[in-house]
Length: 349
Ligand SMILES: [Zn+2]
View (spheres, rainbow, N blue to C red):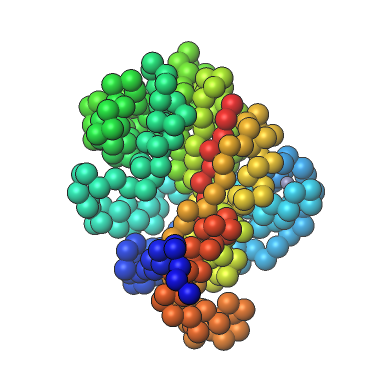
């Protein structure tokens, strides 16, 4: 039978993202740092209600690597770290711990593949801007957690190529002021502060607010969402990415096993796990309407195929029976079924 749909490609995490040795080194450093933070600060960790729905009833799950408590909400089934690391613990983790350096070195070593080749993320956003905001005279874009502005600069290049830049202004905020000082592009307005402080101190409102792999790191993601809501114009868009704990890779490899990518639960970094189910409740509770939730991740099957290799007890170990061609098809289906571990959300005010 002839197929009208082109064969989906196979994405190799270990060839395109990081080698197993690099992944192992980051994983071990992360575990070591998690243990250091736990030993130093666990006496001041605080109990909290479910960060997704606000309910206070939960039951305990297996602790994270015999240290951090992990619980499951009785009202919405969300899984989250409880008690939660304190502000001091997180400050220490992000400023003093080595794993953040190891990861930053890996990102730098990848380098740029060429300025005209835009990432999938930038390409998606440019299309979203054209389609949903293109008729506006002025499009104000804000990235939260922008670091030194590398992504905003890439987006700016793409908008310029598509002749959309003349109507756009690009701003970014990051709690790390030292990163803001390394601003990579003088055409950006970057500010070193938290979103909560920024929303208190500015009268400016935005047409599009974006953030990537940020919301799972925050102690109070609900309060963060309220601040974003306040900063957004009435017809504005809120777009972000976060891990999906119902994704194939997160389900097949638990948070207590070796894994080349951080699980949705990985304290003190990832403090609560969002899913394609609870993100809808969470977004509506924060005052947003849901425009689109999808999972464009590419690496689930490769990560699982490598991780369950030689582990016949894993219920997904049959994956070793598949050819590369079949695995490419499975990953494509995971995307179509919203079952990849990388989630993308677009909300409306
Ligand atoms: Zn809940």
